[in-house]
Length: 284
Image 1 (spheres, rainbow, N blue to C red):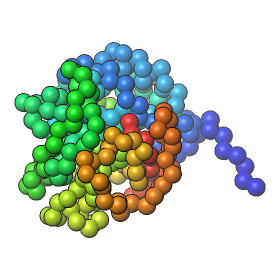
Image 2 (tube, rainbow, N blue to C red):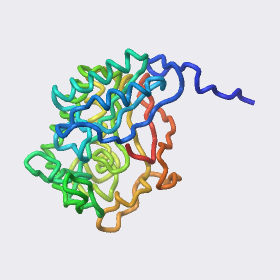
Image 3 (cartoon, rainbow, N blue to C red):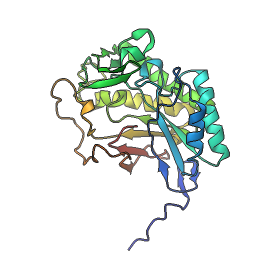
């Protein structure tokens, strides 16, 4: 019989010696300011949890068009990086480790949250059913604008640039949110990806965007400081499209109750030497 694992014993993951095996999953708090700059409340929030072996931040958009919520933090300009630096400095002083989760909302957004009231972008112009939170209250999701093929490399570059800012902000690494209905996941699943170019069709095409993002982010500091969050499905009805979705290519998985507040995660193999990916059926 195997000996039970003590959660409070150290563990090595990639290049990191973690003080224990407790990893704090991303939890949306919406405590940034209106410019998406981290606040002193966020410094206090993360520092109070520094005794976890590793903290993964709440979803943080890598570009202005990646924003999906009201007071969510961003990481696409120097002011936001400076705000995050206050968080990481305080947490490191307390002995903690922290990854930033880069989360591009894609179609899970609204024009009132985006520069120039631009429409949210997505692989295809397929609208979500349901409501989105805005500064004016809950409103219906809009039909997103499908990204042109020539625009996609720029989105990938925005992730790479955000990863560079993560270094300036003092983060130990980056997690790419590719689950539960956000932009990389929108490319992966057939219900939201109706493209006929190199980024659609068979699974190799639908996975192309995510793989390019992973390569771009890993180019900044190496694959051993990059993780990917993936999920086979989302239990939430908010991710349903306005038409009946086709069966996904992903395998079925048991989802937790819809009112669960914690992530259901498994470690799966990643690039050799890299920080493992997390498979989860909950979003940040």
